[in-house]
Image (cartoon, rainbow, N blue to C red; front, top):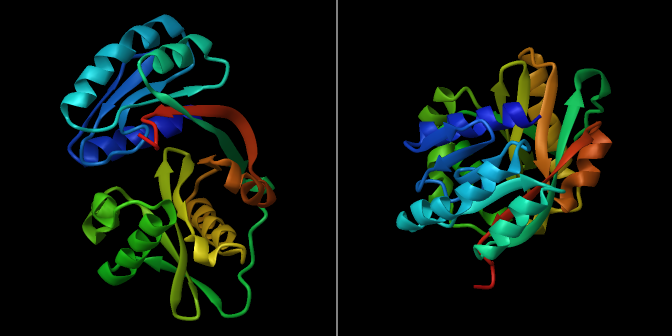
Length: 250
């Protein structure tokens, strides 16, 4: 899943006016408009560690000049990369599972009565999806507003899922085609709506849209909180990413 994930980040960064260079052993991304892991810093490809280690200090200098927090995204067992990132002052934010789902293994989630799924294409529903994402992750809505503009979503061929409980937006996810795969991104359910299956419904709908469009496999990155949901939908883990970035208590 790492190849399509890298391709998705390249499209994302470049579409927002940033720079994305794939250097073989790793990719370097610089996108001040989007301060998230993968969009500013190093995305390790899991090959020779030495060039990745050597790239960390220059990356910190370049990203720091933008006033943006730098990140290194690597894999578990990449001890030299992780150690160098730590020496540079980056903090291990914990592992994320890289997960894939083949079409035949998909077990869709069924919405409960009163819950409905919509495809957000107009400004109002897209703003609702953006607000849910910002609230769920405790981030300023303005940082991600561009990703939920109708022209932007159409331009990158994305599909934004909005789940409603009655008339209230409660969860969202983005389905993004990458070659023969579909990436599932920005799965978000604010804390006040969790525990009622809304996230599974949003993810399931995003997968279904991708499979209906011809994708043969779905992929995503999952925190520990989401892994159980994704496994119930049929995902399996294929790798473990490690995110190294600024300390959240700094």
